[in-house]
Length: 234
Image 1 (cartoon, rainbow, N blue to C red):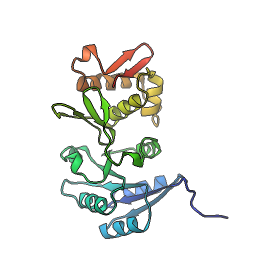
Image 2 (spheres, helix red, strand yellow):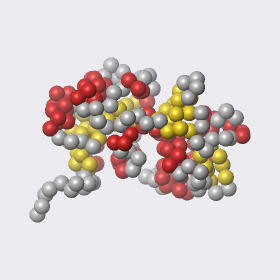
Image 3 (cartoon, rainbow, N blue to C red):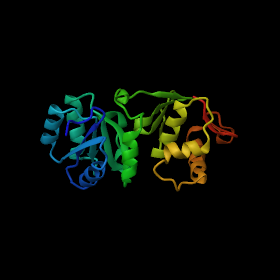
Image 4 (cartoon, helix red, strand yellow):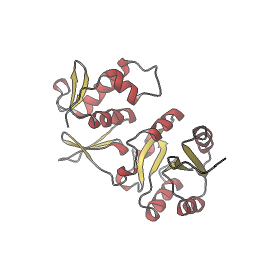
């Protein structure tokens, strides 16, 4: 039997100095042949593994603002500028960070999280190394940074923080600009791992998203409702 790793397999490194979530991730992702997962708890060992092996994604677990995990992010980015780090932390932590100063971090995953969220994230086609230069997507008066779940007003530089689902909705509609996407498609693409989600949940998210981004939510000019569904005007 040939045990050589398939070239399509994604190599993943989990850096968890607290050893609180690494076992969960390794056990569950290990059930999928497309993922090759390794875990490490010490910075020097993690950097050595990055030096001697290519990793598509690096999960980093942080618990505080002054966390050794954030030090690892900076050190790893300094040595490996193309690194793709997914920071797993409580939203209270990363919302107090300047997102542009968290070197190497391309995506934030809120705690607590469901393992299926993580799997869906890895399988998301948009989560690629093409995002490593922090590209801004233009949506109306905003620059949209999907990996940071952030909208930045082009003129006054006001920041609008988005939830994971709000960011996913905007990204999907952006990728299908000008097309009215029906509710069932949006539910499948954004909440695909949870078939029990109703259209009412989607409508609630759309309402809250409009409150954040529209100058006049009653007369929306960016996130448009049509008979067939929702359309983004960027």
